[in-house]
View 1: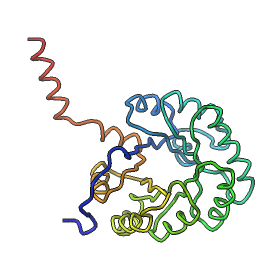
View 2: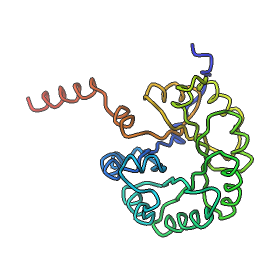
View 3: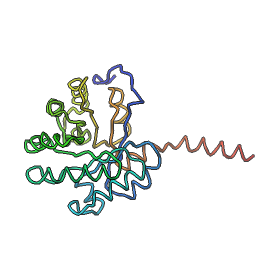
View 4: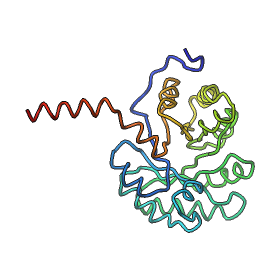
Length: 231
């Protein structure tokens, strides 16, 4: 048995899944499944989708996300050393107009931590991102951040004991306001292992989302039922 897995109950009523992409065609394809609470994105994901991040119309993005049923849209602040308050205000305003909660993502750098403490005064939701170590949970909870996003796959690939860090973060944040939104997942199997620790908040790239909802044997069984029904 994995030493980092504990005997826990998974509270499905608290489960939150997010779609991790800036590709609106992926939004259109996957959001109608009805399993995603929201959408997360950042400059790298925008680049992969062929978008210039500083040219994104966040009002349009927020309205599009809301039209597909998203409850939250997470977007990363452009610059944590200059003009971040104006950017955050504009994102929150876009969400308010569209009827969706916009969440400002801020990296866990020294400048980012300082910026996040100011952004929090605007009253909107904040996510501390690019987490690579359980100690960063202390910072996120002290800031009163709504979320922290550990990069699980990247941590594992960097040779870190990612599962141990996730267990430690869960213990550090117990009873706090800050939810652990696990990012950079490489497989659904990783999600299952993390859920066995009690984690219930994940953001998934479209490929992992497709892996989550598709099962060959289920499709085969459904085809058998259909054939039987038709005689």
